[in-house]
Amino acid sequence: MTNELPAIGSTTWVVADGYIPPHSTGPAPEMTSHDSVCILNAGPQPAEVDIFVFFTDRDPSGPFTLRIEGRRAHHQRLNDLGQPHAVSPGRDYSLVLRSNVPIVVQHTRLDSRQESNALMSTIAYPVQ
Amino acid sequence: MTNELPAIGSTTWVVADGYIPPHSTGPAPEMTSHDSVCILNAGPQPAEVDIFVFFTDRDPSGPFTLRIEGRRAHHQRLNDLGQPHAVSPGRDYSLVLRSNVPIVVQHTRLDSRQESNALMSTIAYPVQ
Amino acid sequence: MTNELPAIGSTTWVVADGYIPPHSTGPAPEMTSHDSVCILNAGPQPAEVDIFVFFTDRDPSGPFTLRIEGRRAHHQRLNDLGQPHAVSPGRDYSLVLRSNVPIVVQHTRLDSRQESNALMSTIAYPVQ
Amino acid sequence: MTNELPAIGSTTWVVADGYIPPHSTGPAPEMTSHDSVCILNAGPQPAEVDIFVFFTDRDPSGPFTLRIEGRRAHHQRLNDLGQPHAVSPGRDYSLVLRSNVPIVVQHTRLDSRQESNALMSTIAYPVQ
Image 1 (cartoon, chains in turn red, orange, cyan, green):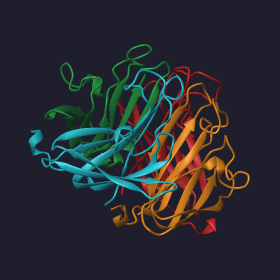
Image 2: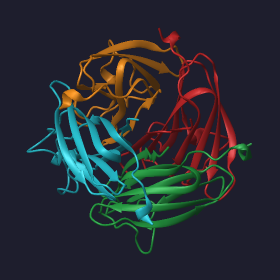
Image 3: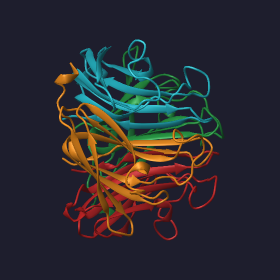
Image 4: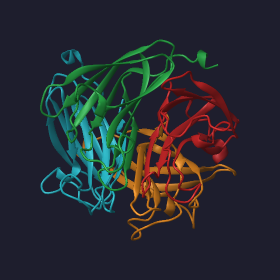
């Protein structure tokens, strides 16, 4: 029955509060402080997702491109985007994601700078 | 007066960031790490809610079906969905929920891997 | 210049994940575990806000009515709603809020059951 | 390719749950308790953003004006808005942001009153 599900969501999404906490407590990689974009490509076609990174004091970089197969979830740590870093820990940024097919994007941060980790999450902003 | 409230919400919702933290600190079940979908069926008719689970590396599973009576709230831990597990702890996933009547869905995680628990929550993405 | 701002938002809002953690760590009332609806009435007219509380196993209760003057914020702990409790700590619930004028509603929980408090927040679901 | 991105978002946004926790644990300014509005101005034109602050018991104040250059992110701690404070720590407030060009706004709080910090975040409410 899951084969009947159509593509769902928007083709452009924004994450305004990007930040990778620069310290961590606990075993890596599980408890490493990170910022993630969690993406669902519910439809049958592969998604090509371009990620643009905006900064406070210089021109944006990107796009960094992800390929997500049809009917797949993909959770991407921003820590792991680009070579070696699209975004440096400890610096403010924002993201724009653009896909060739509709996707859904949720933004989540794990912050383990202090002894017990904190979490935050929000649906990203879908452009209509 | 609550009998006058109509059905509210959307019939399709998405949670992109699914994850059940694989460890816990504190007494079960209250402080057990979990991922939940919290659902309101405000209208008078029962809701049949199909939950589809998407993974990063294999085909989606489901639907897993919940029945929620009219004018009732239902908070469902994903930990408890399916036999024995619809989703294994420690693995990324996404969810699509489809209902025969309008509902509202909020996604919440409790993570007690470290000594003091973390929480995160967001309204799910409503398909219009 | 703030006198020029119009009423903003929706007249019906939903919070699906209601829960008051039943224990607390730290000084009351500041660090007492609580669930809150934070409301902005940006326009010039007073808002009469009816709050309906939905449960998992019995009929909804309410409405509980708040009056919020024009151009005022109001943060309401659910702990303090009703006589003596509209909602008991440790039990799942959902909320529907209805106002005679447009308002904006955000849902926030502070959970201090364990030693360092957790927070979660989301924009509520606006009915259009 | 980032030069091709248009302005994205809404020109009016609301944060209903404003609060600066009045105590902190850990090194300043990184771990100082704060409330932030994280703003993306994705388009080419500078944004002039007026921030209005609403309180529970007195008339709103503002606007406090930010200028954000085109294609830039800006994360603003409310702690640092105004002279000396637009909003005092430990008091409830709400925000309305109005911009001359479309922007996207996310609201985030870091609360380090207790030993390990808590985080919460949500997309702000976009007026359409």
